[in-house]
Image (cartoon, rainbow, N blue to C red; front, side, top):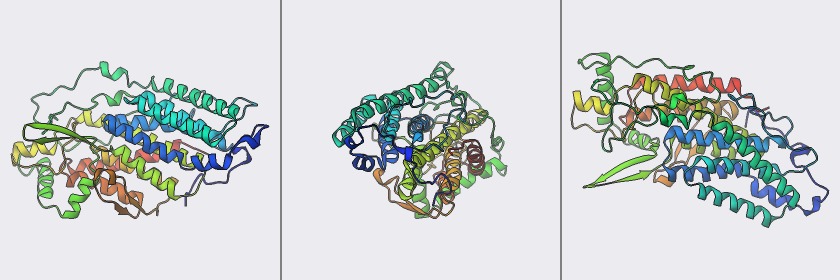
Length: 441
């Protein structure tokens, strides 16, 4: 059972107008009973189609879910706004006295308003919102409440978007591109696509809860060294040997947690790309599964989705700061240069520096938050990767899933062990900080 935020609905959950009988409230409530989860799935589909990088995807989830929470928190007078809890978020709109609203509708309108402004395929999100509004009208709702709710949702969305515009995202594109140098220990593009460095200035974005991007810096990697017997050489040899000796289950683990949104595939002289879910999308899916399984109000479930999305966003900002600070060479480049020119990793090496492991940081940060807000003993079957052709996997806890996600980077041949170990510690610290600084009740 959820350890926090589970309570019965209060009488103010739905504010009735004088024409209460005109509502088909039972059908409306049924229609919206899984809306926080369903609309995150819809957003994931758009994010995958738009091929957003992991950091950018995490930002989209965060702003959309914050807006959704601020739209539905009025279901219960004990719910707290995220205003003043998140950096520079102030003076959020509130319901007008004397007006009636249906807050589940307010929430999803706010969610889709924000989402359509942050994705490329805005028409797809607009169609999602249009269908939502048509469905609500067909079910039956008082037109004054409908108008109030839609307008209030759009007002919240506009406020969140204005706040988002000030986070440094747009300004980062004016900063210098990543420079590839002759430094042998420095990251350089890897095969087969030799893609440019992804988001070298992500650390310039405003964090959501962290005091600064350096707050939970994990420390530098092992010093680069090409001498046999050196610590760094041994770390590279561990990756090399591990990949050559993988069991079938370890191969499955590596592929299950790949979460590379854009894999390049070469057939002959033709290269094409395959799109998949991001690490943040994977953990948002795990969270929606947990919310479907457990009891609680819509505002409580949306609150947890918002906190997890915020955690993911700050995890990527924190991780990316050290990545481009250390600019460490990937195992594939090192091994091909100094150990075995024909060696290949199981997974395609992502297009950014090695230290620390982003999946390790994001996974343990999310697991830390979910363990506290849901349960330390929550066992689940993860079906996230089924749409991408992979079977389900079972876990006894969120932490077990996070630890498997982390070690998958060694099995996949894309990270040295210190990036995994330090990444897990970094993620746990970030998750703890989020829990200490965000209160929903």
